[in-house]
Image 1 (cartoon, helix red, strand yellow):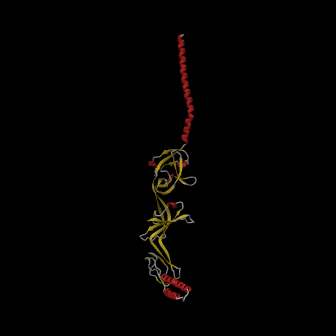
Image 2 (cartoon, helix red, strand yellow):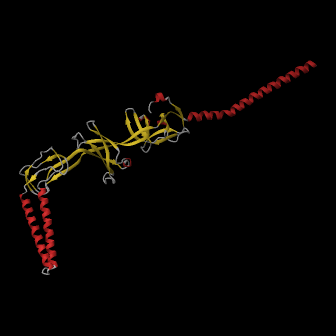
Image 3 (tube, rainbow, N blue to C red):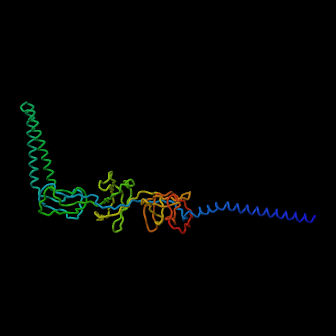
Length: 366
Protein backbone atom coordinates (compact mmCIF):
# COMPACT_ATOMS: atom_id res chain seq x y z
CA UNK A 1 0.00 0.00 0.00
CA UNK A 2 2.74 2.34 0.99
CA UNK A 3 4.67 1.36 -2.14
CA UNK A 4 1.67 2.23 -4.27
CA UNK A 5 1.43 5.70 -2.73
CA UNK A 6 5.13 6.31 -3.31
CA UNK A 7 4.80 5.35 -6.99
CA UNK A 8 1.76 7.59 -7.32
CA UNK A 9 3.60 10.54 -5.74
CA UNK A 10 6.52 10.08 -8.15
CA UNK A 11 4.17 10.01 -11.09
CA UNK A 12 2.52 13.26 -9.95
CA UNK A 13 5.90 14.95 -9.45
CA UNK A 14 7.15 13.89 -12.89
CA UNK A 15 3.93 15.16 -14.46
CA UNK A 16 4.25 18.48 -12.65
CA UNK A 17 7.86 18.93 -13.80
CA UNK A 18 6.87 18.04 -17.35
CA UNK A 19 4.05 20.53 -17.20
CA UNK A 20 6.39 23.28 -16.03
CA UNK A 21 8.82 22.49 -18.83
CA UNK A 22 6.02 22.47 -21.39
CA UNK A 23 4.68 25.78 -20.09
CA UNK A 24 8.11 27.38 -20.23
CA UNK A 25 8.73 26.21 -23.77
CA UNK A 26 5.30 27.39 -24.85
CA UNK A 27 5.91 30.82 -23.30
CA UNK A 28 9.27 31.16 -25.13
CA UNK A 29 7.68 30.21 -28.43
CA UNK A 30 4.82 32.66 -27.94
CA UNK A 31 7.28 35.41 -26.92
CA UNK A 32 9.46 34.71 -29.95
CA UNK A 33 6.43 34.80 -32.24
CA UNK A 34 5.38 38.11 -30.70
CA UNK A 35 8.81 39.70 -31.09
CA UNK A 36 9.51 38.30 -34.56
CA UNK A 37 7.52 40.93 -36.55
CA UNK A 38 9.46 43.85 -34.92
CA UNK A 39 12.80 42.26 -35.78
CA UNK A 40 11.66 41.64 -39.32
CA UNK A 41 10.48 45.28 -39.63
CA UNK A 42 13.87 46.53 -38.47
CA UNK A 43 15.67 44.27 -40.89
CA UNK A 44 13.47 45.45 -43.73
CA UNK A 45 13.92 49.13 -42.69
CA UNK A 46 17.70 48.88 -42.67
CA UNK A 47 17.86 46.96 -45.92
CA UNK A 48 15.51 49.53 -47.60
CA UNK A 49 18.05 52.41 -47.17
CA UNK A 50 20.22 52.87 -50.26
CA UNK A 51 23.86 52.41 -49.50
CA UNK A 52 26.25 55.11 -50.74
CA UNK A 53 29.94 55.62 -50.41
CA UNK A 54 31.10 58.96 -49.04
CA UNK A 55 34.30 60.78 -48.37
CA UNK A 56 35.09 63.96 -46.48
CA UNK A 57 36.51 66.94 -48.34
CA UNK A 58 37.96 70.06 -46.71
CA UNK A 59 37.85 73.56 -48.17
CA UNK A 60 41.15 75.09 -49.27
CA UNK A 61 42.40 78.53 -50.19
CA UNK A 62 41.78 79.24 -53.86
CA UNK A 63 42.74 82.24 -55.97
CA UNK A 64 39.50 83.02 -57.76
CA UNK A 65 39.74 84.29 -61.31
CA UNK A 66 37.44 85.67 -63.96
CA UNK A 67 38.30 84.80 -67.56
CA UNK A 68 37.17 86.94 -70.50
CA UNK A 69 38.07 87.29 -74.16
CA UNK A 70 39.52 90.68 -75.00
CA UNK A 71 40.87 92.88 -77.76
CA UNK A 72 44.28 94.57 -77.55
CA UNK A 73 44.38 98.24 -78.48
CA UNK A 74 47.08 100.88 -78.58
CA UNK A 75 47.12 103.01 -75.43
CA UNK A 76 46.65 106.08 -77.64
CA UNK A 77 45.51 106.17 -81.23
CA UNK A 78 44.37 109.15 -83.26
CA UNK A 79 43.32 109.47 -86.87
CA UNK A 80 45.14 112.36 -88.53
CA UNK A 81 42.97 114.67 -90.63
CA UNK A 82 43.72 117.86 -92.53
CA UNK A 83 42.31 120.84 -90.64
CA UNK A 84 42.81 123.23 -93.55
CA UNK A 85 42.90 122.73 -97.29
CA UNK A 86 46.20 122.78 -99.13
CA UNK A 87 48.77 120.97 -101.23
CA UNK A 88 51.27 118.67 -99.50
CA UNK A 89 54.73 120.29 -99.74
CA UNK A 90 56.76 118.30 -97.20
CA UNK A 91 56.61 114.81 -95.63
CA UNK A 92 59.37 114.89 -93.01
CA UNK A 93 58.43 111.55 -91.37
CA UNK A 94 58.06 108.21 -93.09
CA UNK A 95 55.38 105.70 -92.21
CA UNK A 96 56.37 103.48 -89.28
CA UNK A 97 58.84 105.94 -87.77
CA UNK A 98 58.75 107.15 -84.19
CA UNK A 99 57.90 110.71 -83.25
CA UNK A 100 58.13 112.89 -80.18
CA UNK A 101 55.31 115.18 -79.14
CA UNK A 102 55.60 118.40 -81.19
CA UNK A 103 57.45 116.85 -84.16
CA UNK A 104 56.31 118.02 -87.60
CA UNK A 105 54.00 115.52 -89.36
CA UNK A 106 53.67 117.19 -92.77
CA UNK A 107 53.56 120.64 -94.32
CA UNK A 108 50.92 122.08 -96.62
CA UNK A 109 51.29 125.08 -98.94
CA UNK A 110 50.97 128.10 -96.65
CA UNK A 111 51.46 131.21 -98.80
CA UNK A 112 47.73 131.97 -98.70
CA UNK A 113 47.60 131.55 -94.92
CA UNK A 114 50.59 133.85 -94.46
CA UNK A 115 48.93 136.50 -96.60
CA UNK A 116 45.72 136.24 -94.60
CA UNK A 117 47.73 136.57 -91.41
CA UNK A 118 49.40 139.78 -92.62
CA UNK A 119 46.01 141.16 -93.67
CA UNK A 120 44.49 140.31 -90.29
CA UNK A 121 47.38 141.96 -88.44
CA UNK A 122 46.97 145.12 -90.52
CA UNK A 123 43.22 145.16 -89.90
CA UNK A 124 43.80 144.95 -86.15
CA UNK A 125 46.22 147.89 -86.28
CA UNK A 126 43.71 149.94 -88.29
CA UNK A 127 40.77 149.24 -86.00
CA UNK A 128 42.88 149.94 -82.95
CA UNK A 129 43.92 153.36 -84.34
CA UNK A 130 40.36 154.26 -85.28
CA UNK A 131 39.15 153.38 -81.79
CA UNK A 132 41.83 155.48 -80.13
CA UNK A 133 40.96 158.46 -82.33
CA UNK A 134 37.26 158.09 -81.54
CA UNK A 135 37.99 157.99 -77.82
CA UNK A 136 39.97 161.27 -78.05
CA UNK A 137 37.10 162.90 -79.88
CA UNK A 138 34.67 161.54 -77.34
CA UNK A 139 36.52 163.34 -74.56
CA UNK A 140 35.86 166.64 -76.33
CA UNK A 141 32.25 165.69 -77.11
CA UNK A 142 33.02 165.48 -80.81
CA UNK A 143 32.20 161.79 -81.01
CA UNK A 144 29.21 159.84 -79.78
CA UNK A 145 29.34 156.93 -77.38
CA UNK A 146 27.62 154.74 -79.95
CA UNK A 147 30.39 155.31 -82.49
CA UNK A 148 33.03 154.39 -79.93
CA UNK A 149 31.23 151.16 -79.11
CA UNK A 150 30.90 150.31 -82.80
CA UNK A 151 34.62 150.79 -83.40
CA UNK A 152 35.43 148.72 -80.31
CA UNK A 153 33.27 145.87 -81.69
CA UNK A 154 35.08 146.07 -85.05
CA UNK A 155 38.41 145.85 -83.24
CA UNK A 156 37.31 142.68 -81.45
CA UNK A 157 36.19 141.16 -84.76
CA UNK A 158 39.57 142.01 -86.28
CA UNK A 159 41.36 140.38 -83.37
CA UNK A 160 39.23 137.23 -83.79
CA UNK A 161 40.14 137.10 -87.47
CA UNK A 162 43.80 137.42 -86.50
CA UNK A 163 43.52 134.45 -84.13
CA UNK A 164 41.84 132.41 -86.87
CA UNK A 165 44.57 133.33 -89.37
CA UNK A 166 47.27 132.23 -86.93
CA UNK A 167 45.48 128.92 -86.29
CA UNK A 168 45.10 128.24 -90.01
CA UNK A 169 48.80 128.87 -90.57
CA UNK A 170 49.62 126.50 -87.71
CA UNK A 171 47.29 123.83 -89.13
CA UNK A 172 49.18 124.00 -92.40
CA UNK A 173 52.10 122.44 -90.53
CA UNK A 174 50.52 119.96 -88.07
CA UNK A 175 52.66 118.42 -85.31
CA UNK A 176 52.37 115.21 -83.29
CA UNK A 177 49.99 115.67 -80.32
CA UNK A 178 51.86 112.96 -78.38
CA UNK A 179 54.88 110.70 -78.73
CA UNK A 180 54.25 107.62 -80.82
CA UNK A 181 54.60 105.93 -84.18
CA UNK A 182 53.25 107.20 -87.50
CA UNK A 183 51.41 103.95 -88.13
CA UNK A 184 49.78 105.07 -91.39
CA UNK A 185 50.62 107.82 -93.86
CA UNK A 186 48.52 108.01 -97.04
CA UNK A 187 49.61 111.53 -97.99
CA UNK A 188 51.77 112.08 -101.08
CA UNK A 189 53.86 115.06 -102.16
CA UNK A 190 51.80 117.30 -104.36
CA UNK A 191 48.51 115.82 -103.19
CA UNK A 192 45.73 118.27 -102.43
CA UNK A 193 44.05 117.69 -99.08
CA UNK A 194 40.70 119.22 -98.29
CA UNK A 195 39.80 120.19 -94.75
CA UNK A 196 38.62 117.04 -92.96
CA UNK A 197 40.42 114.53 -95.21
CA UNK A 198 41.99 111.61 -93.32
CA UNK A 199 45.62 111.02 -94.27
CA UNK A 200 47.29 109.08 -91.43
CA UNK A 201 47.22 107.53 -87.99
CA UNK A 202 49.44 108.12 -84.96
CA UNK A 203 49.62 105.45 -82.23
CA UNK A 204 51.38 105.10 -78.92
CA UNK A 205 52.19 101.52 -77.83
CA UNK A 206 54.40 102.30 -74.82
CA UNK A 207 51.36 100.93 -73.04
CA UNK A 208 48.57 98.72 -74.32
CA UNK A 209 44.88 98.69 -73.47
CA UNK A 210 43.00 95.39 -73.46
CA UNK A 211 39.22 95.73 -73.53
CA UNK A 212 36.68 93.02 -72.68
CA UNK A 213 33.01 92.63 -71.83
CA UNK A 214 32.06 91.18 -68.43
CA UNK A 215 28.53 89.72 -67.98
CA UNK A 216 26.28 91.61 -65.60
CA UNK A 217 26.12 88.71 -63.12
CA UNK A 218 29.90 88.87 -62.60
CA UNK A 219 30.69 92.58 -62.83
CA UNK A 220 30.44 93.08 -59.05
CA UNK A 221 33.58 90.95 -58.67
CA UNK A 222 35.72 93.20 -60.87
CA UNK A 223 37.25 96.47 -59.67
CA UNK A 224 39.97 98.92 -60.65
CA UNK A 225 43.44 97.86 -59.49
CA UNK A 226 43.03 94.08 -59.78
CA UNK A 227 46.05 92.34 -61.29
CA UNK A 228 45.43 90.55 -64.57
CA UNK A 229 47.22 88.10 -66.83
CA UNK A 230 46.92 88.76 -70.55
CA UNK A 231 47.43 85.55 -72.52
CA UNK A 232 48.26 86.02 -76.20
CA UNK A 233 47.27 83.59 -78.93
CA UNK A 234 50.86 82.32 -79.20
CA UNK A 235 50.98 81.50 -75.49
CA UNK A 236 52.97 84.51 -74.32
CA UNK A 237 51.73 86.21 -71.18
CA UNK A 238 51.78 89.86 -70.11
CA UNK A 239 50.94 91.38 -66.74
CA UNK A 240 48.35 94.12 -66.47
CA UNK A 241 46.06 95.99 -64.09
CA UNK A 242 42.35 96.77 -64.40
CA UNK A 243 42.27 100.50 -65.16
CA UNK A 244 38.59 101.07 -65.93
CA UNK A 245 35.21 99.45 -65.21
CA UNK A 246 32.14 100.87 -66.91
CA UNK A 247 29.38 102.20 -64.67
CA UNK A 248 26.60 101.23 -67.09
CA UNK A 249 26.07 98.10 -69.18
CA UNK A 250 26.00 98.05 -72.96
CA UNK A 251 22.37 98.29 -74.06
CA UNK A 252 22.59 95.49 -76.63
CA UNK A 253 24.57 92.92 -74.60
CA UNK A 254 23.87 93.88 -70.97
CA UNK A 255 27.58 93.44 -70.33
CA UNK A 256 30.09 95.91 -68.89
CA UNK A 257 33.21 97.23 -70.61
CA UNK A 258 36.44 96.62 -68.71
CA UNK A 259 39.87 97.99 -69.64
CA UNK A 260 43.21 96.55 -68.55
CA UNK A 261 46.43 98.58 -68.82
CA UNK A 262 49.56 96.66 -69.86
CA UNK A 263 53.06 98.11 -69.90
CA UNK A 264 54.81 97.44 -73.22
CA UNK A 265 58.50 98.36 -72.80
CA UNK A 266 59.50 96.02 -75.64
CA UNK A 267 57.14 97.81 -78.03
CA UNK A 268 55.44 94.56 -79.01
CA UNK A 269 53.37 95.05 -82.17
CA UNK A 270 50.24 93.31 -80.96
CA UNK A 271 47.65 96.11 -80.98
CA UNK A 272 44.52 94.84 -82.70
CA UNK A 273 45.13 91.20 -81.74
CA UNK A 274 42.88 89.05 -79.56
CA UNK A 275 43.86 87.93 -76.07
CA UNK A 276 42.46 86.16 -73.03
CA UNK A 277 42.12 88.13 -69.80
CA UNK A 278 42.54 86.29 -66.51
CA UNK A 279 41.49 88.74 -63.78
CA UNK A 280 42.56 87.85 -60.24
CA UNK A 281 39.59 88.34 -57.90
CA UNK A 282 41.33 87.44 -54.64
CA UNK A 283 41.51 84.38 -52.41
CA UNK A 284 38.40 82.45 -51.36
CA UNK A 285 37.58 79.11 -49.72
CA UNK A 286 36.78 76.40 -52.24
CA UNK A 287 36.87 72.63 -52.75
CA UNK A 288 38.78 70.59 -55.27
CA UNK A 289 36.80 67.55 -56.45
CA UNK A 290 36.67 64.98 -59.20
CA UNK A 291 34.43 66.16 -62.08
CA UNK A 292 32.58 62.86 -61.66
CA UNK A 293 31.03 64.22 -58.45
CA UNK A 294 29.27 67.03 -60.32
CA UNK A 295 25.69 66.56 -61.50
CA UNK A 296 22.68 68.53 -62.68
CA UNK A 297 19.33 68.84 -60.96
CA UNK A 298 15.93 68.97 -62.69
CA UNK A 299 16.43 72.68 -63.37
CA UNK A 300 19.79 72.14 -65.00
CA UNK A 301 21.71 73.65 -62.11
CA UNK A 302 25.19 72.32 -61.43
CA UNK A 303 25.69 70.85 -57.97
CA UNK A 304 27.15 68.19 -55.70
CA UNK A 305 25.34 65.61 -53.56
CA UNK A 306 26.48 65.22 -49.97
CA UNK A 307 25.17 63.67 -46.76
CA UNK A 308 24.22 65.71 -43.69
CA UNK A 309 24.41 64.74 -40.01
CA UNK A 310 21.02 62.96 -40.26
CA UNK A 311 22.29 60.82 -43.17
CA UNK A 312 20.03 62.61 -45.62
CA UNK A 313 21.08 63.55 -49.14
CA UNK A 314 21.60 67.24 -49.88
CA UNK A 315 21.92 68.52 -53.44
CA UNK A 316 24.01 71.68 -53.14
CA UNK A 317 24.20 74.14 -56.02
CA UNK A 318 27.84 75.06 -56.65
CA UNK A 319 29.85 77.48 -58.77
CA UNK A 320 32.38 75.94 -61.12
CA UNK A 321 35.50 78.03 -60.62
CA UNK A 322 37.95 76.21 -62.88
CA UNK A 323 38.78 72.79 -64.27
CA UNK A 324 42.00 70.98 -64.99
CA UNK A 325 43.42 67.55 -65.63
CA UNK A 326 43.71 66.95 -61.89
CA UNK A 327 40.18 67.98 -60.88
CA UNK A 328 37.67 70.79 -60.67
CA UNK A 329 37.52 73.70 -58.22
CA UNK A 330 34.05 74.55 -56.97
CA UNK A 331 32.57 77.05 -54.54
CA UNK A 332 29.41 76.90 -52.46
CA UNK A 333 29.90 73.86 -50.20
CA UNK A 334 30.26 73.91 -46.40
CA UNK A 335 33.83 74.09 -45.08
CA UNK A 336 33.91 70.37 -44.33
CA UNK A 337 31.59 68.22 -46.42
CA UNK A 338 30.76 64.50 -46.63
CA UNK A 339 30.24 64.15 -50.38
CA UNK A 340 28.76 61.09 -52.05
CA UNK A 341 31.55 59.54 -54.13
CA UNK A 342 29.71 56.36 -55.22
CA UNK A 343 25.96 55.87 -55.65
CA UNK A 344 24.96 59.50 -56.06
CA UNK A 345 23.07 58.74 -59.24
CA UNK A 346 20.62 56.49 -57.38
CA UNK A 347 19.56 58.90 -54.62
CA UNK A 348 17.65 62.17 -54.52
CA UNK A 349 17.72 65.33 -52.42
CA UNK A 350 16.18 64.74 -48.98
CA UNK A 351 16.41 60.92 -49.19
CA UNK A 352 17.79 59.09 -46.17
CA UNK A 353 20.68 56.78 -47.01
CA UNK A 354 23.08 54.35 -45.42
CA UNK A 355 26.49 56.01 -45.91
CA UNK A 356 29.81 54.25 -45.69
CA UNK A 357 33.02 56.28 -45.48
CA UNK A 358 35.42 55.38 -48.30
CA UNK A 359 39.14 54.89 -47.96
CA UNK A 360 40.41 58.42 -48.69
CA UNK A 361 43.64 57.02 -50.02
CA UNK A 362 41.83 55.24 -52.82
CA UNK A 363 38.93 57.67 -53.29
CA UNK A 364 41.09 60.25 -55.03
CA UNK A 365 40.08 63.92 -55.30
CA UNK A 366 40.81 66.66 -52.78
